[in-house]
Length: 415
Image: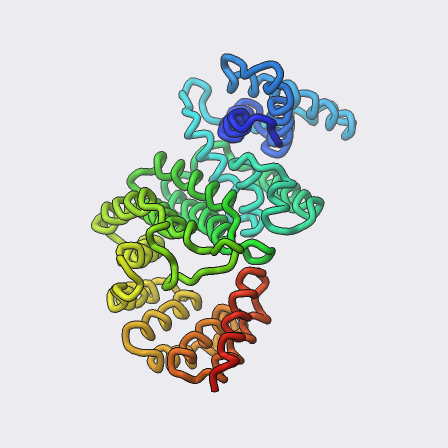
């Protein structure tokens, strides 16, 4: 869906999950309702620039989507040659929310998000369906974001919608007992979307701003709907404190600039202030989760006026807390970096030696990049150069590759 007018494009994308939620609530059958909604959004993008935005754009879109849904149901009924197809597709009355219970637009959007992140779906399918149904991105846009052919992404989304259909999920928020587990899945998906945007796994650009913006927008929505969930606040704080550095992460030629070399005057101070307020409010509330701890680490980095004033002992302590609740090799790798900065490179290299036997991280370019950096800190330039080359050979993002090769070349003049 592409609009010729930025105002219309923003409005249509913002309304997308509200329209889908309204149609699914009224008619059921998520997969066909999603197709109908996408066609209504496309109609708006094509017609509104010439006809003008209707007085009630949401009602206009719901009407068009409902009409298109009827057409799609009739077409499928004819294809199946079964007179009772439609009646069997519509969710049973008891599965739908009571008609007399008012539903807010935020309720519908949040329900859609939980549906798209259902644990029966693979993480890749959860991400794709979330960006399509809740984010309002087209299949082509999602395919471009993840650098896969459009038909591959179409199949992935179709399979995810079919799985949702087969699961016969009721259109409502999970029961209280299931909310925590379901929320974990939602936050994980939003975290993955943000990370893919902040450091693209492949392609020419270091980051994808469209994905980070969308992840932050959706996390803000969850935060508004679940204001008492500290991990939601933690995740939003983490995104804001991390994304605040984006203006300083690359040079004029798109080259990667490491955190320690960034011009901190370019950092987004509004994001930093908001992130600090969120994590400061969330931490004292009770049990601390991984997103809050990661946000606290990001806060320590962002509060340092200069790289050399970073409170590395505090970061080490926070990573050690995080390691107690998260068996994540990337956390262990970052802990090794923090230890090296606080206690010296040999201490960090000692921790890396222990990680070398972990197949989840030993072959990753990040492991070799960290090893190269710590070896360079000790003056072992030849070994550092080999480690930088090993890291570059494993990196799939071109900006990271160029940065790592440049580091290796820089060491050619050192014995």
